[in-house]
Amino acid sequence: QLQLVESGGGLVQPGGSLRLSCAASGFTLDSLSIGWFRQAPGKEREGVSSISLNGGRTDYAGSVEGRFTISRDNAKNTVYLQMNSLKPEDTAVYYCAASLFGTSSSLNERMYAYWGRGTQVTVSS
Image (cartoon, rainbow, N blue to C red; front, side, top):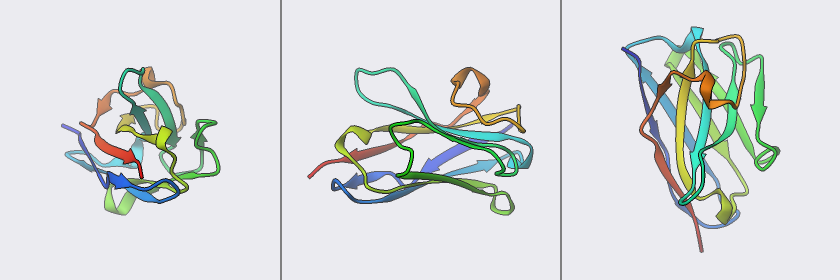
C-alpha cells in the first residue's frame, strides 16, 4: 500500500527557505500526480502546489506563486517543495498527497486518495 512521508519542515525566519520532501513507499510515484497542501491553525486545508506524473504540468496557489517551486525525482520516488521568501502566513502543517489522475495537476483535494501525516513549518522571528 502506498505510504507518503513528509520531511524537511521546521522553524525558519521570515525571508528564509525550506525544502520539503515527500517520499513514497509501497508504490512507485511515476504514475501519480502529487499535490502539496497546508493547514494553518483555525483554517481550512488549502492547496499549495501540484505536479503531474512526469512534471510536465504544475500548479500553484496565488499566494505562493513565484516563491515556491514543486519538482519531482521519480527515480528517487520523491517529490519536493522548495519554499523561498517565507512569510509568517506560510506557517502551517504541510501535507503531500497522491492522485491516481496522474496526467492532471490539481489543487482540488478531492482528487487525492493518499495522504501523508504532515510536517510542521513555522515562520517566525
